[in-house]
Amino acid sequence: MALKVFTTESIGAQRNHIAIYIETDPSEDRGWLHHVTGTILNGMDYTPRPTPNPEVLPEHVPDSKKEIGTIEEADLERFREECCLAVPPPRAQVTLKGTRLYPDTPLYRCGDWLKDVEEMAFRKGILKSLLRFHTRHIRVRTPMLVSR
Image (cartoon, rainbow, N blue to C red; front, side):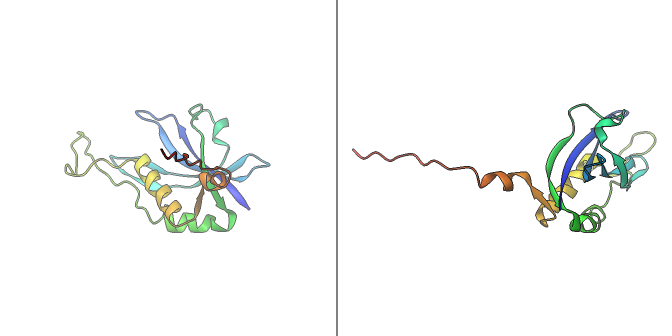
């Protein structure tokens, strides 16, 4: 069975937090949130968790839940193992004084991790794009050539 996959945001202290939500039980409006938690001071960890629909949570940013694709129920473990666990979570990158530990490397935050996981899952065919389902109904019109 194909399950819907979304990105969603929750309110953060200095910037919003972004995660992937997979709706595993549509009848109960529940699923799994795949994200990293922590800070760029201490580093982050991959911490998936079961959750109700993020839209009902008080920290949810309104209108931030966006459907990005689908995943087959049989591929959930592959998604976790081959994507979420394969992409290293952001490490500690600053000191208490705010000094960058790796000044020649751009900061890598939760949104960057999520983007890398999402791209890997689509590349491996674990996540299926919504566009794939719609393109078979699109007709391409070619311009008529007029000879003089």
